Image (cartoon, rainbow, N blue to C red; front, side):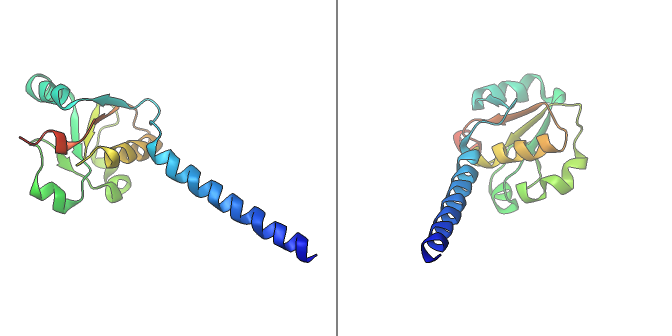
Length: 130
């Protein structure tokens, strides 16, 4: 039985490692039906189609206050579920953060809440700073 118990512990360890790897990899996989635009695309939208979109910066408040784009409402990622009711599910949303990774996660969370027309800005605000 000692050998069997040892084998069971190894199997449990392998399962834990496998689940952890899946969790990590999921963060880097594309989000289904998520659109990606460039900073130049965003600049054009802000110039010519601003009223057709909702703009959300999902950065933490400190980052948002240090630098943000005009017209973007700050809803930090950790509050996106609680504050999603401030957003219109029938109007497209453009999400941004400092690098693009947090906005991708925000997109996943909003999709689970029934939002469908979601776009992120590739590279985030860091690529838009002048």
